[in-house]
Each structure stands twice: as structure tokens, then as C-alpha cells.
Image (cartoon, rainbow, N blue to C red; front, side, top):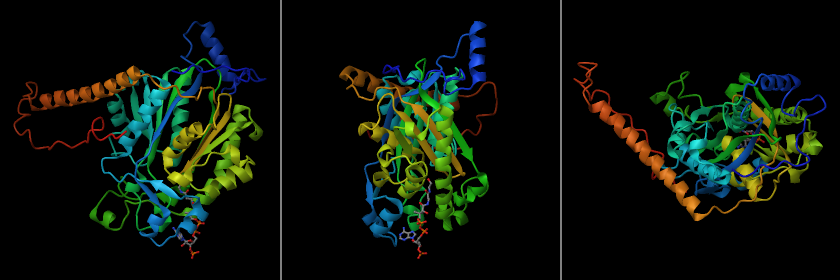
Length: 441
Ligand code: UT7
């Protein structure tokens, strides 16, 4: 893991004696714990130490969309800022395969092996299945044998929700390394005949590794919000328990995204600024302290209205890449973070805000004191080879475990006589393998 730097501007205790990410009561508890000789948490701060993203190769431009629906490049650019988006055209590319590539990159940047991960949080609105969780498929492909794994459903706010959960696990002392992923194949749930929605979305994945550290800084404050009364403004109506899939739901397109764009727009411009203000206040910052805002990349007008106009944060401090990717939902902030780093927009010591909103309705923001060095050191060939070998070993282990399960299934069970009289009654459900040839790096 890259050494996290402590600098003179590090987040030292504030005047009330609390660290910026805690309150007085929390500090007191920590002190009591230490005097009682109970081991302290593994790290009092949660830092992002690795990052990576991956998008499908296929690009669909606004001009391409003109051939599909009644729209035009000028309308899409002026109303949204989007010029093109990446789409998983290959059926083998799924939310899990995109996520696995992004996650491997994040682990490589952090130089942390997969077996050190304690928890994998996969934020997604397009999971592989209703269950099992996409996070578990990712865990298997990474060979993260010591990790818990779950999917997080908070739509486009999901990645920041995931960071908040990661920070909580780390500050509680329950985890040292948490992998947080946002991954989407929205092209699979978008109605390509509906110009209101199909022009907006794109596919991709971004991942970060969050690590426990004693160095002050990292994720200092979070704000999570929801308003379920607006749930119907952005929804996939069918496929859940409220409206299970049927011929009728499919023929009426109820398995596609339905959106009241204007209502979502109004909501977004309201909560983005309010949530940013909250996390700044909790971190002890003002808008003037901010070096970089990475907002959810939904619509340039939403970003201009909220971050630039309401918060008065200058455009050069706000990272925008939605023109290339469209709205990739949970993946938009981590992809933008990676590109901001590539573009040299993030340096140790910078005060950073991530802020997003989405279906639910939900919103989320967090403020960070970024400490991790961002310059990438080329990994030696032996390290890359060893890393590849661990992934091949993970795939082999996964196949072995499946084979053992299969053997148990076909062997007669002495404890349940009669169980095997009709063994082929339930056909095996095909779960696609994610660890092997489906992943294109
Ligand atoms: O992660 C959260 C995901 N969702 C969002 O972020 C959505 C937030 N909302 C928005 O971004 C905007 O509301 C949209 C981009 C979806 C729409 O922009 P708008 O400025 O609110 O447009 P509008 O819906 O008011 O439509 C204006 C006109 C309408 O025509 P009339 O009634 O004025 O004749 C629409 O029929 O533009 C028409 N229109 C289009 N024209 C060309 C709507 N979609 C299109 C289109 N191409 N794709």
C-alpha cells in the first residue's frame, strides 16, 4: 500500500477537542477504551488508497442516437452536456465483469492483495441477478477469500453510500480494507425507443480501496439522505415483488427505466448544494477550502446550477467528464475520480467533495482530506505476474469448489434415504462464471 503522508495541514483536533470526523463524545469513548486497555480500532481514519475504472469499448455518439430515436446532437449537448457514452455491446460484458477489471486496477494501485480485503461493497442498479449479490461474484473472481460481500441499492448515490459504509466499518475497527465499487450496464434496462431516457445513460465501472490508517485525514464526513415519496419519479416498475415479471410487464416495457426528468432535475439541484454544505460543515471546511468537487455526472446543467451557481465553487475546481460517458449512475463518481487523478487534478493535501443524487430518491456527499500519493509507480513484471497468477488460482479454486459441490450432489446421501431417488428433478441453474474468459482487460 502506498505510504499515506502526514503533512502540517493534516486534520488535527479541532477546538472542541474532536477530530474533524468525530464529535466530542466519540473522542471520549476512544480515550476510555484506551485507558481500559481494550485494543483500539485498527485505524482511526479511512483513506482511499487505490482506484481504477473500466468502460466497455463500444461508443455510441449523439449522431448514432439520431438514427435510433427522434433526437439531435444539438438538443442532447445543450440540455445535458453529453456527447457520447460507452455501451456493453458484447453480451459477455456485464456489471460484474466491468467491476472485476476496475477492482483489479484499484488493488494494483494500492499494491494490496485480494486476500487482505475484509469487505466488498458493490453499489449497482443493474446487478447480475436479483440474487446472488454481484459483490459475491466479484469476490469469487478476485479470490478475496477473507471478504464479506454485499450489493448496495441506493441508485446513483450508491457509491458515496458505499464509502460511508466503508468508513463506518473501518472506524469501528471491523475492517482494515474495504473495496467499494460502482458498476453499471444501464444499456440493458434502458428503452432504446424512449428518447427521454436512452440519450442519458452509459455503462462502466469504478472501484476504490478504502484502508484503515492512523494518519489523520481521509473520509472526514458523510451525509446520506432519502425521500421515498419521490420513488416513482425514477423507477424500473417490473421485476421485483411489487410487479413480478410476466408476458404483460415485458410487452408493456415495464422492465425499462421510467423517469420524470423535470422532477428529478428540480430535486437534484436542491439536494446537491445542501448536502455539500452539510459535509463541509461537519468536516470543519468552508466552500473556499475546497480544491476539487467530483459530482455525480448526470447533467451539466445540474452541476452548473448546484455546485457552480449555488455554492459558488469555480468551474476549474469541479471535475466533469459526462460528455464522454453520459450518466453511468453508481460508476460516475469513481470513474470521474480516476480521470481527475489522471488529469493531475488531485494532489495530497487537497480537500475534496464527492456528491451525488439518484433514484429512491436518495442523495449523498462526503468530504475528504486527500493524503494518498497519486503518482503511479509502474509495477515490476514479477508483481504483475504474481498478481495474474493469484487471479488464475482464484478461478481454479472457484472451479474446484463447484466441482466438489457437484460431487456432493451426485453422491448418495446416507443420512437422507430416498433423497436421491429422483435426483434430476430440479435442473441446475446456470450461473455464468465471472472469473474466467468473460473478463476482457
Ligand atoms: O442519475 C439521475 C438520472 N436522471 C437525471 O439526472 C435526469 C434529470 N433531468 C434532466 O436531466 C432533464 O430533465 C432532461 C435532460 C431529462 C430533459 O431536459 P429538460 O430541459 O427538462 O427537457 P424537457 O423534458 O422539458 O423537454 C423539452 C422538450 C420537449 O418538447 P416540447 O414539449 O417542448 O415540444 C421534449 O419533448 O424537448 C423534447 N425532448 C427532446 N427533444 C429531442 C425530450 N427529449 C428529447 C430528446 N431529443 N432526446
